[in-house]
Length: 184
Image (cartoon, rainbow, N blue to C red; front, side):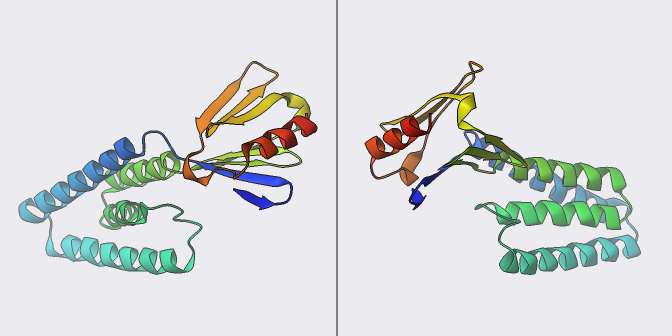
């Protein structure tokens, strides 16, 4: 999609989003099973009430934060992220630090793994993946081609990035390819 006269932006979908989503939902089910087991077996009433109150306060806070700040929860899996963060915070609030830290860490990894890759092509080439952003000047690029929805960036270091751009491609591939050839 062309965002300005000389800048092109592509959003590439993560390859294994369904697998990561399944793993996150499995983690949430394991958390739920651990909570039910702890509630039934051995937790004192004060720990139960602490866990539940921290869980609901964290969930409500994160839902409100999600509505106001969409940059933190950037894709469709915000409910899974909110639930994972709420479980992690609740475990820590109840004094079960190891499970809480593991839940928070795995939710953080889920958030990074499901983030879309954004490629911006203009005066420089910017590639944003998860937490990282790399900027490449055109003198590091051998060739950039868009053909039949397949974006290929060939670096002079023999590194090759090749990915389907999906539905959000440019309207005129020859115009894009001409622009990239002029930059090289």
